[in-house]
Length: 133
Image (cartoon, rainbow, N blue to C red; front, top):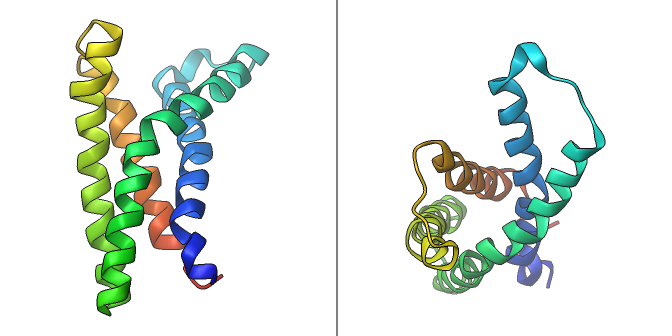
């Protein structure tokens, strides 16, 4: 029964962890002049629902692929690795084909940080979260 909610747990943890990692990345990028203020906290809070929307297609695909691989009896490594690769592809597709059409602009090199970090957070959550807990 707990395995049924595993994809949902991965999705929720990923949308919470990703903005924190993005914030830490920006702090490290501007290291000499870093001071914490409450607008930084607002940045993290705003990115959580944005990440939830952007990761929603990834969550749906992840749920389907994970369920399919679980029912087929593949090893735990395959059950975690294949969905992460598929989700990473979905995240990049979301960022580079769907979001620019909504926002009216194409992302440059600096904005590539977002899909990389969201993919990384999804992968780390998948690898470290035990599906039976």
